[in-house]
Amino acid sequence: MSMFRRQLAERLRTLPFELVPLLPAGFQRVGTLVLLRLDPQLAAYEREIGLAIRELLSATGVFVREGVIGELRTPAVRRIAGYEDVTVHKENGCLFKIDVTKVLFAKGNAAERGRIIADPGEQVVDMFAGIGYFSLGIAKRTPSCRVTAIEKNPDAAALLRENVELNGLDNVTVIEGDCREVQAAGDRVVMGYFPGTEAYLPAAFGFLHRTGTIHYHNRYAQQDLWRKPLGELQATGVACGFQIEVLDKRVVKSLSPSKVHVVVDARARKL
Ligand SMILES: C[S@@+](CC[C@H](N)C(=O)[O-])C[C@H]1O[C@@H](n2cnc3c(N)ncnc32)[C@H](O)[C@@H]1O
Image 1 (cartoon, rainbow, N blue to C red):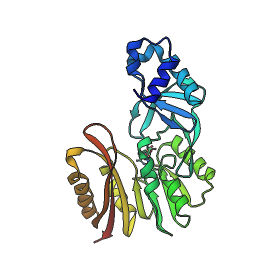
Image 2: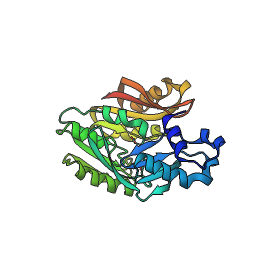
Image 3: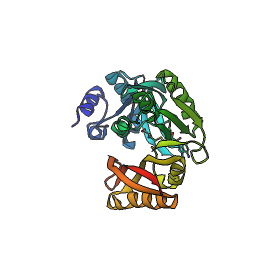
Image 4: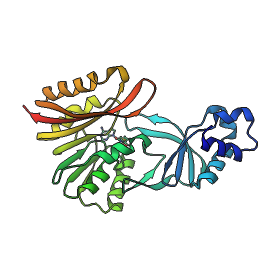
């Protein structure tokens, strides 16, 4: 039994013994908030579970995660204990103000968010900036780069503007809008979104100067690696007048037994 489940079970004296194995084995902490999945069979005990977790983890809010909705990847979450939806999360030396009822913060992307480094003086376009997942770290690690952070969801864009301030950054420009309709130029393009990211590849190539780097995220079935992502990059690159060289390809996280979130780093050169 996981340590968390055992500690929780010890606090839930009225929970029937047979329901103990259904208690969550883990959780995600975002600042002072805690998010987790809850088996529907525990619905009648939700309030007690929430209060026990709040006490155990000193959380100001405990949320049940029920999915992610639509194009803007809006979280479906429900607060079961506590009183706050907004917190400040620290990761890779950056501060992220976040409202967990309005925007996602994917736990499994932490290493990837910390990996991307711009070269000095580079122009970076972050096509799906959210609250600054990639933009803040890139701008902080390379103060001489310039980041154009594009975000379509007005709630996320407002938090992104606050986060630029909160981190004392003067090299990030926030543009609220659809990345397919924004005019910007870059040496490096970050495509931190899935699924269906292939539809945004023409816009990514459209941002590039004569040469540049694209960080292409997407979701694939295991059996389609790496033929499908590399094929999509090559085909769209050529159609947009670019030659592609793959610099790196990696699995960011597993999404189910058969599906993975991957990223391909590709160098593009105008033909
Ligand atoms: C939720 S994030 C992905 C998770 C994030 N990479 C992380 O590390 O946690 C994707 C963002 O892209 C935004 N988005 C979706 N479609 C967009 C578009 N066409 N143009 C600009 N932003 C878009 C969503 O609103 C969302 O904030």
